[in-house]
Amino acid sequence: MNIYNYLFKFIIVGDTNVGKSCLLLQFTDSRFRNEHDATIGVEFGSRNLKINDKQIKLQIWDTAGQESFKSITRSYYRGSIGGILVFDVTSRQSFEDLQKWYQEIQGYACDKIEMVIVGNKIDLEDRREVQTEEARKYAQKQGFAYFETSAKTGENVDNVFETMANQVLKKIDSGEIDPTQEVYGIKIGSIGIKKKNDVVQPKEQPKAQHVTTSQTQQQEKNGGCC
Ligand SMILES: Nc1nc2c(ncn2[C@@H]2O[C@H](COP(=O)(O)OP(=O)(O)OP(=O)(O)O)[C@@H](O)[C@H]2O)c(=O)[nH]1
Ligand SMILES: [Mg+2]
Image 1 (cartoon, rainbow, N blue to C red):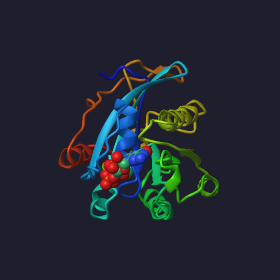
Image 2 (cartoon, protein in one colour; image 1 turned 180 degrees about the vertical axis):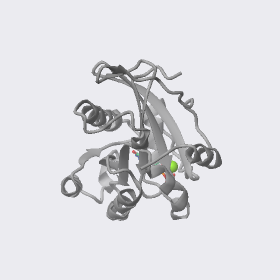
Image 3 (cartoon, rainbow, N blue to C red; image 1 turned 90 degrees about the vertical axis):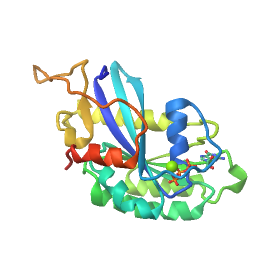
Image 4 (spheres, protein in one colour; image 1 turned 30 degrees about the vertical axis):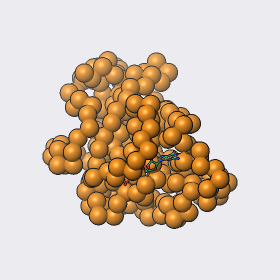
């Protein structure tokens, strides 16, 4: 059912093992998984949020961090309005690799994409290799907000997604993003949005589900991008 004002597509990227899938699982199901069940290609999850007076559906693409899936995951950058760059605060390498992920997004995503940086696994404080201040400065330099989370305890996880959704909504309200342009990774739902005295017609949405790479590839072939 597409009972929402807007659907926003977000994408999560970062090195393998940083906790991308666990962040998504915590956000959508309030659960944590101890095992590293490496993502094959791309999976997705979704959750509805209420922001101000708007019903927002987030459709979140969780990508594989392993190098061998790069060519598959690249095709998902386009058509996303939000990008979440994740590193693991107990792994300096994953922090240094952020630059690589940032370049990937710059190269393949829409120019309107809203991005944030997330330092995950803050429950492992005694194993921390990247200090908050250093990460914050790096994020600031790129012009992004910085969040620290624990997908294990759930600390700050909702805040990441809610803040991103809020930012996108603000840009729609200010006219910076035109929500009728599906290339931006936004869809208008059946609640309907009045814009410039017109009622925008709702469009059909896919049901939220976990899907295999081949299914999503097929699905994306039908979608547009900038
Ligand atoms: N202590 C702790 N462990 C975490 C946290 N988030 C994830 N993990 C663990 O880190 C490992 C990797 O988590 P995943 O979510 O599968 O990692 P991923 O980034 O999706 O990895 P790929 O799919 O290979 O790209 C798992 O063993 C998780 O249990 C966290 O916040 N705290
Ligand atoms: Mg994963």
